[in-house]
Length: 296
Length: 334
Image 1 (tube, rainbow over the protein chains, first blue to last red):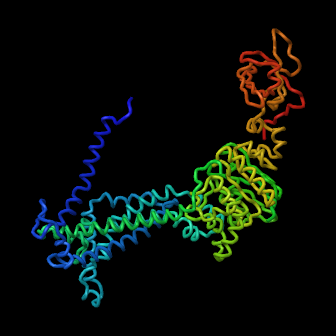
Image 2: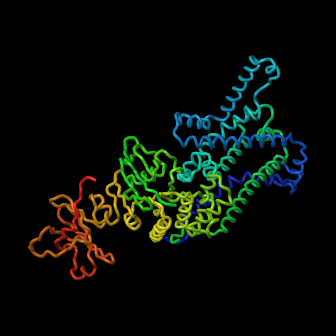
């Protein structure tokens, strides 16, 4: 054996570069094309460089009401995020104990990931239609006269999104509590903490970083969800549904500008999160460390 | 803080069909340092956890001072536990870890931090008060864990393998510190360990456990010099368990004397013939491994000077003998 790289290193490196290109190439292309000149088209070559399409996006002309679709998606995403975190945490805690029907409940929950999204969506829509018919037929007049549908952003669409985020949330909670050292809870109990105090002051702070992860995951799943939203959304669309509609009607780089803006917002959020973690760590590191010193 | 007497009366723990702790009786005087010693799975940790209240007792009673605490929750027993690898809360600084129990009782921040600083001072950890556990060495973590347990002003401190997470050098240093602290505070310590050297160095009362029962309880000298069973003799180390016509006896390895057997020299008294299997130089003494008949393996410790006067090689034939006073009869049942 000699020092230096083996041939397999170069093969694997080439494969990795191809993978990265495949992963980020489309995004880079869209970001570049969003800076097309005013006369540029939907594809390369670039016809000058400008902020024209961003200006157009900002002024709101041309494209349908993107801003309110954005706000609807944001609201739905935040509600889904909150519910996913709360329900997954409670479920995760429950699954640490043995209870009757535990396995059945687990399989039923996870089955929702296996059933095709569009089928789930159709099922929920059908269920709401039956519910609407029942209301119209049997409810007292003062309800049934006014009733149009129970479907909407925070009923059927919310439910559809939760069928997607909750199983993931539960699986992540399993991983979290698998690593959780039960001795922390015993120590808290030994020091006189009630079960609620143990959860509030010991368990919750320790799993909090993971819960932030569950929340972000829930939000992202909801934010770009199309299939489950498609049949259950009711009359007002979310952002992904609007964008899907736009791809067939819009013929200018304005849609790329929209893509760049939303990507930029995502990067900004991630950047702020990372920066604050680094800041907190740097502040604590000032206290110094003797970790791993066997003689102290 | 003054230590109370701890008494276990027929304490039993069963998990389904298996009995982890089998009706043990034990009395630990107030202010004593007690070590529960035994191999893993012998029931020593379960016993400790039952004293702490983290494990329900199947049968029997745990008495602390004048009180029967069998049915009390951990925090109302007057015990405090130091967990294996300490279980310091990773998100709290040292001072907040120590102040935790006061916070749970709703004591205001000023008071509880001041009290926590006193305890950190007791274990010489004041300069590290604002560090997180991950920024501490093993020995420092142990001191913080001690302070956190002591702030509840317990009558008994329960320690679950407190030294096992430390490097060998530090282990010896920290065990001296534990002993000093126990003497200073005058409270009862119950310390679980599987290291007989640790138990001998620390304990006023050594309790040797095996398969859920107490094989022997006594001072380190009593247990080491006069083991009651073959298990205790083997576990404490430094002993030979020898089959003699009257039953089994234990003889300390440093009390065996070896004389060369040349030709057909007759054996005297209880001496038995053996063949030297290996010779290990151990510094202050020489350890000689011997084979004496059917599966009877013996070890003799001979001073360096005595070995030099009579060097032995593997394969040499020797006569092994001991003074009658050094032979301890072993009972077959505990």
